[in-house]
Length: 242
Image 1 (cartoon, helix red, strand yellow):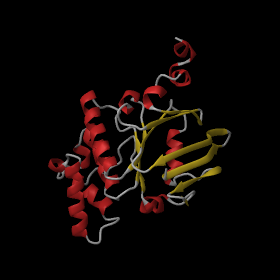
Image 2: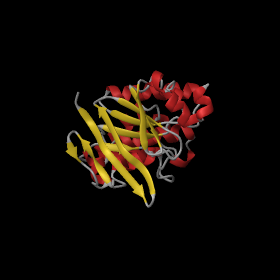
Image 3: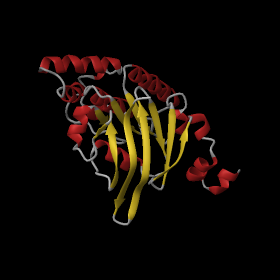
Image 4: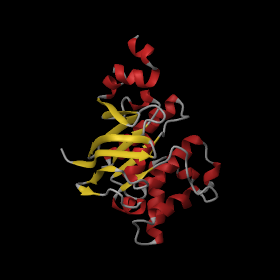
């Protein structure tokens, strides 16, 4: 199986704190991986290492076999890896359309091509009717969709998605899962950080669990949520033994 992302033995320290310890992770083409763990487990640090915001103290990150460890974020975006953020980061005073056009300029040959691409992405995400609103006028659901829209306009091969389901209603979660599957079917792999664990069922092919910077479990979503070590990491020893 060909992997688009390979994280090999990555360790990252902040002073005396070891945020990641010898972490390994592989993502195949068109695969959706869930990444879970309690607060402080190292999930965001791993995203930051993959995207070039942080350089690991040990280990490396490969993209289609190429070592991209320590490359700047703009270079990593150019080669096909992008991310969204837990707290949406739009250009708040610009319109939804203008926000998405900015992302589309990365690979467009002209401004008109970027505008057409932005409209296509907004239509895909069901946001065409919101295109003239300022980004700050959007509710939580569409703030998160705008994050996805900006990422998609760069023609990514891999998207790292940070807590896209937080604050959503059950029916909104299901609609988002359907949308992510459509995106995957267009050839995009994903790593999804999420605390709404049930939301990963039916979405992810595999789930990886981090705890105190170490990978403690990996496997089928249905099996992972029942694993004693995962219950212990989230709920404590009492619940794990129950």
